[in-house]
Image (cartoon, rainbow, N blue to C red):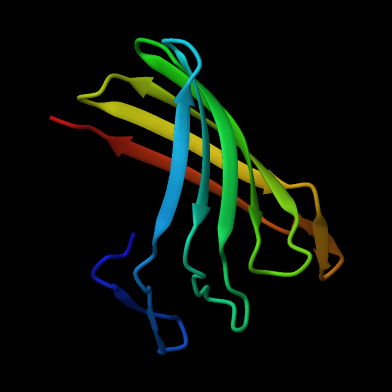
Length: 132
């Protein structure tokens, strides 16, 4: 990932370069429609938070239907001490040529800021993809 080390400007005007990342994993197809996977970042990766690096280890299981797929998993940042485990859930609608993908993740650990509580880690993604 980030093979060409893209660079972005932050809201403060500073630049942030994404270093190339290396990840490895294995997958096993239990049946024609059920697959499991385990993967790990081989490199530690910088984040926008100074001094907080990311190196994820992840495991998951998925069901692949003809036009609908669903998956669930766990991930943990092994680079940061005390990092919570985060759960993920995702689904895809469509085929190989064109599909809509929705996914999210959230940790079971919460942090407070200005009298409000937020998950310590979380994310959400919507993507339109395809192959030909």
